[in-house]
Amino acid sequence: MSGSVALRRGFFSPANQDILSHSSSSYNEHAIMKPLLLSVVLTLAVGLLPSASSAAEEMKTATLCLADHPHKIQVEVAETLPQKARGLMMRESLPEHSGMWFKYDQERPGDAGFWMFATWIPLDIAYLDEDLRIVKIMQMKPCETIIRENCPAYDPGVTYYNALEVNYGYFDHFGIEVGDQLQQCE
Image 1 (tube, rainbow, N blue to C red):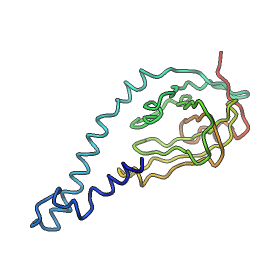
Image 2 (image 1 turned 120 degrees about the vertical axis):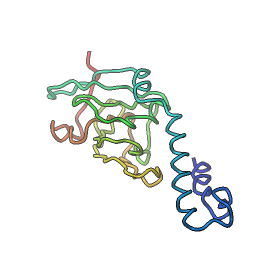
Image 3 (image 1 turned 120 degrees about the horizontal axis):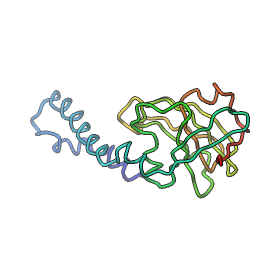
């Protein structure tokens, strides 16, 4: 990743100005060309991602339950790297009692959080231990920049094996808190 960050940051460096325009170009042309070029690159990059509907079709689904919670939570299960990378990006909405369950084969460090790049809806995230017990809950707001490095990371500060994303405010609304344990419904 560090190589790709260096490449992206270095692309607009003074050494690469001749790529963007002729050396006799005015400042205004540079000011127009940079956002235009960035827009084209971002459009191409987003075009390489699977559409939200095709990503959802490929994912398994499951139902999670919680003692004393009156609703079952219908989730898409993100198990592969592309599914996890895509997450809930570019969704316009999420039904009330649904979400995405991110499953990992091994313990994740507390500084390996989630971010909201290209995610249009605010979300709650519960970080879960190996037994699906909630070890941390955070609220995440959409990142409004097209520069993904400017999006904050929501690091839990505790190790985890799973994460569950649901609509913003869901956990507070239903009194779900750290220590509660989810289970896969039968």
